[in-house]
Length: 263
Image (cartoon, rainbow, N blue to C red; front, side, top):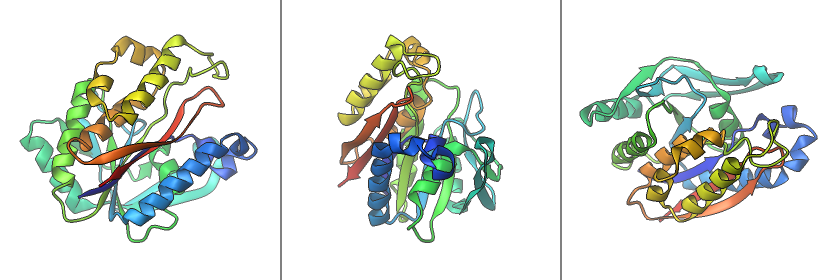
C-alpha cells in the first residue's frame, strides 16, 4: 500500500560537495528535505517508487528500470566520490508491468544500472536512515498530461493493493524562469506556472493541473509538471493532506518541497 508521497527538487547544489557555499542560500529547501526524510523514515516504506523527468525517456511509452544493482553518481557535476546504491524491487515492478499492459497503458522496461541525478539527489538526501529498502525507478514520456495522470492512477491501482509499504516520490523542479536570477531571465509564464502548481497541489486539484494551458507549461521551462501529475494520479481517492514545506527560487529555478500526509 502507499504509505508516503512527496515531491522534491533535484538540484545538485543541494549536495555539499557540489553546492558548497550555495547551500546556505538553499537552507530552507535543505531543511524541508530533512523534514521529508524524517517523515519517510517514520512511514517505514519497503520500496521507493521515484518518477524522474531525466531518466531514459520514450516518446510513446512510460518505462521502468530493472537492474540487479543501481548506482547513482554525480560525476557530471564534478563530484567523483559521492555514490548511492540501490536494489530493484523485481516482483513489484513485474506486477506494474503486467497491470499496465492489462489496462493498455504503454509501459516498457529498460535496463540501465546508472541512475540519473533526478533519482540520485533524492536518494542521497532521503535514505540515510532507511533500512532494507528497494527501488523502482520510473521515467516519464512524451505522452500528454492526461496520460501522465492516468499512468499515476494505474500506479495507485497496483501499489495500493500490495501488502508491502510503498512511498511514491516525484523528483521535480519547477520553472527555470521563475525570477530574474534565472540564467535566461524571468518570464511571466514561469512565474504563473509555479504559482498555479503550488495552488493546485495544496488543494490536491488534479483537474486544475490538467486544465493548465499547455503552451504556458512549455514556455515555463520546467521539468516537474508530468512527474507531479503522475504523483497526483497515484493519490486519487486516497485520504491525504498536502503540506508545502518550502518553495524558493534563489537561482531562478523553482524548488518545491511538499509532502502528502496519508491517513
